[in-house]
Image (cartoon, rainbow, N blue to C red; front, side):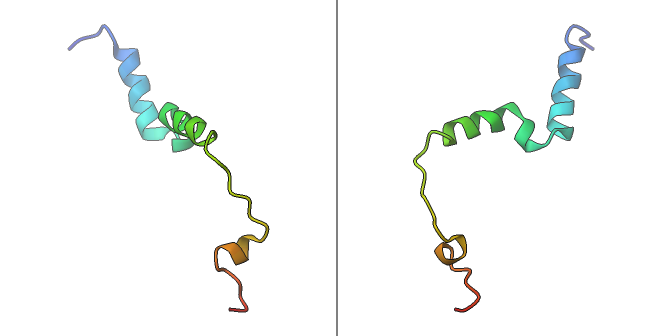
Length: 55
């Protein structure tokens, strides 16, 4: 068994098994990319997404 990098293996296993996706580095990178995308402004969320109870 290679004992040279056990802390790295332990940390990687912990990240994969226990961290919430929003804390994972790849998730943070994805959100940084998405934050640069154009924004759609919505005045009435329910109406925009067809969630009006009247319909």
